[in-house]
Image (cartoon, rainbow, N blue to C red):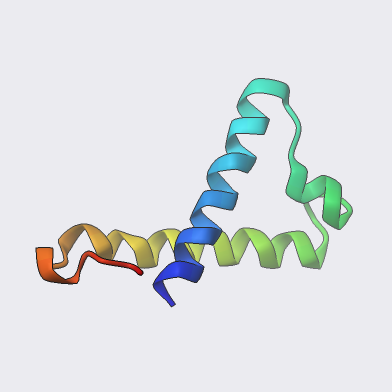
Length: 67
């Protein structure tokens, strides 16, 4: 679960990088626009993954391995 959440967070971060540098939203481009159901699902999953990974900041040092 942790790896999946991290992958989604990385996808979101890369998407924001593209938006910031080139004003290009790759999620919207792939799934047909900002308002499509698939785009909204991806944005929601990325957001939930971000919330989930906040918990990683507060785990004990013994549990920080995500491998």
